[in-house]
Structure formats: structure tokens, C-alpha cells
Length: 284
Ligand code: SF4
Image (cartoon, rainbow, N blue to C red; front, side):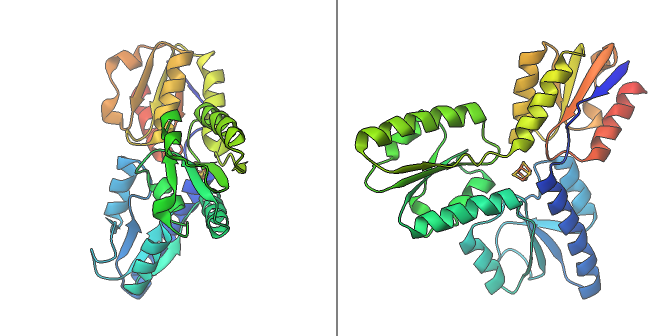
């Protein structure tokens, strides 16, 4: 079998930085004899979360859930009110929020202070969407839109700003933005469109499309609950008819080993060691 790795795969810069901060927190916890937490799962990858648990890092969602210690804010960020709750409860916070998410939070904060209606394109309930909406003066007033039908909630009674979850599909954002532009023009309402989509996903998808042309089948490695990994899987299905989405070497099946030229890609939250492990399993 010939294995060909995609030119761009695995941890993005935001996740790499958050992982680095957790490692720092583990050291700090040892020195200060404090428990170490991440607020929510650091990344959407079960394997990596198991690894962190073995390092003594627990996941908490609420400041009242565990004794105060060192808590790392994950790359998705957290809402301002939640951050304050952790500080009030005596936690030391280490901020692992990706700079791109921090930028979206800054945009929301600034525009909501100027009384703009915030329209956020993204997946309802996604951690980043909650963190970004949570930067608004009144988070409950942020309209989260997942598709065109979500625009029905927009009233055009005040100026609008439209931005996006960083990992949202670029094409779907463009469709929603195009429609909102027409509606805002018809209503005579000011609209500012900020395409805050991170290129990490697009770069992985572009490299994957090139990879598909060189191989007989593709394995996409990453968490089943990772949205960018699922998008890679969808893109691979367009490029080739034989695609698997797996997240552990135990999921390698004999059929995969019979592929002559296998392409490998991995989501932005997939650690290198997991990619290596699966490659070893494929060739043993
Ligand atoms: S995908 Fe982009 S926005 Fe999200 S953590 Fe990675 S670098 Fe940051």
C-alpha cells in the first residue's frame, strides 16, 4: 500500500496553541498543587480527551461543579458571563481562546455597544457560537442563523452586522449573506457583512481535493463530533467514491488495507500521534 498524506492536515494553529496552554497548566498545577481543568472539552476528539484525562486534566462546564483550581479556556472560547463565574469562584484562568474567535468576540462586543443587531451564522448550541454570542451586551438578543429560514427572525428595526462561526461552510455563509443583503436593501436597513470564517478548514479541503485526484480511496481521521472533520468527510465523498471516517486504529478494517493508493487527511482537532498510529495499523 502507498499512503499519501494530504499537504495540510491535523491540528490548526488555534488548537495547537490551546494544547500548549493545557500542558503549561498541568505543570503549573503540579507546582501549585491545584487541580487542572478545561472548561468544556478542549477539542472535539475523544482520543485526545482520554489522553488529557490520564494527565489528570478534568473537563468541567460549570464553576460550581468542582473545587477551584486552574481552568483552561478552550480554543472555542467561553461567554463573558461564564468567565466571570469562574473568576468569582476563585479559579485561575488560562485563556486558550483562538485569536480568530477572540476577534469575533471583539466584533460582537463593539457592534452590540453601538446597538447593532448581531446576526451570527453558525450551528445552534456550538461552543464557539455560545462564546461569541456571549460577548454581546445582551447575548439573548443575538440571532443565530443556520440556514435561510433563520433570517425570518431578523426585524430590520436597527442596523445589522452579520458574522460567522469560524468553521461554517463558506458557500452556505455566502448564500445567507447574499439573501440578507437583498432583504436589508429592501428594508433600507444598514448592514455590515463580516466573513469571519477561518481558512484552516478551507485549506484542508483544498489540499484534500488535490489528494483525491492521486489516490484510490481516502481515510478522514478525526472526532465524530468535530464539525470540520465531518466537512472534510463530505468533501472527500465528492472527490472519490471510497471514503472512511475513523478516529482510532481499532476502526481500521481489512478492506482499507487492500487499497493500493490510500490518501490520509485529518481534521483540525486530530493530534499527529493519532494519525501516525493509524498509518502504522494500515501498513502492518
Ligand atoms: S479552526 Fe481556525 S478558528 Fe478554529 S481554532 Fe483552528 S485556527 Fe482557530
